[in-house]
Length: 146
Image 1 (spheres, one colour):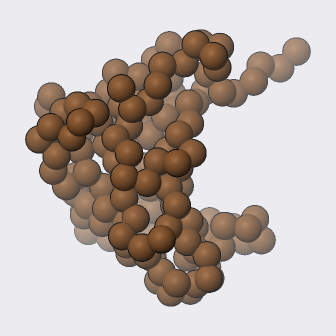
Image 2 (cartoon, rainbow, N blue to C red):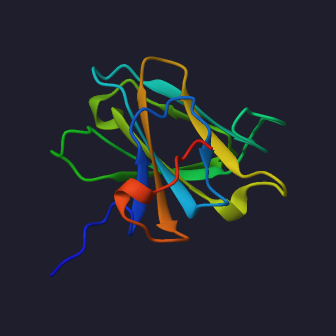
Image 3 (tube, rainbow, N blue to C red):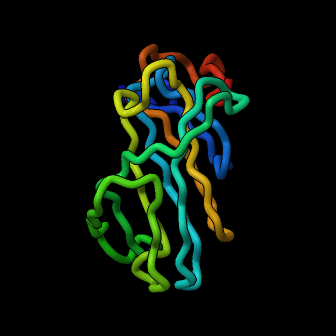
């Protein structure tokens, strides 16, 4: 019998644009998925903070690679690389409608436990906390923003 993944492998926050996500206390890392259709392009900014109210908020220049595709399952992910930065800029091209940015808990500064990815356009952001420290039934998962 197979086990479901929610609560065992990951927790999710579907509406995570600009929302602080607890990484250090709950999971090894967070995978952010951004999407803005229409080949419009977008800028996503990664920040870290000490708590869910944003204490000590600062840009987190930890993004060296990220992945893009159309977001509709019709193409494979394309790896993109850049010098370490706190932002990802997707081009105004259908092949960059969707973006994946992965952040490891070890990339946060000391005493920082929260991260957020914010779209400066109309893009949506979903946060998936992964490699959970404690596996639980979905109904017993802690809220990711506290």
